[in-house]
Length: 187
Image 1 (spheres, rainbow, N blue to C red):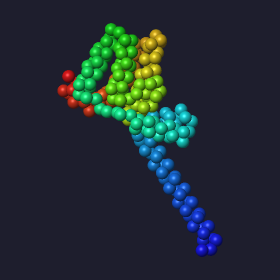
Image 2 (cartoon, helix red, strand yellow):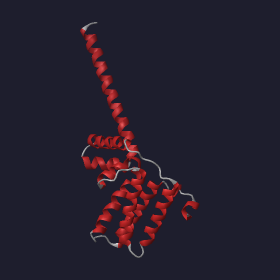
Image 3 (cartoon, one colour):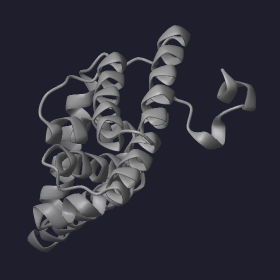
Image 4 (cartoon, one colour):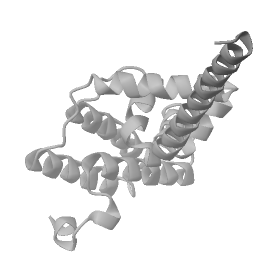
């Protein structure tokens, strides 16, 4: 084999390796963008670049794989659903208490599903792996609940907070409105 042939073979191998690496990276990006939806863009904005953001999202996936996540039993779902109905009914008379109770109920539901309860940022990151479509609801609701705790949320803020919590709660419960059967609503 001549030197020129050897160099051509080496360059071809390098070009194939670079193309394979680029293809794998594009596929990873597409998978993460599809899985995380708007959360993908949110993390890119927060991290400042795509590579760091994707590393963060991959770290989240790896962390959540280690959890023993499970669906709720019928009894748990019924109990939590009843608690949500009660919390929601409090809103007219005491919107502050209703929102704070909704915050606690969402955390209780996460815990029952197997998510570890730590600081809000970690909880949000963990939940985003399997519930990315509603994670912005959690972020917004939590911000409003914090304003509520310090007396800086008005009734309209608290109403929006309840709506955000409801979307997340239903997703965690496994009964989001489009999938819910009419008889489940009346139970």
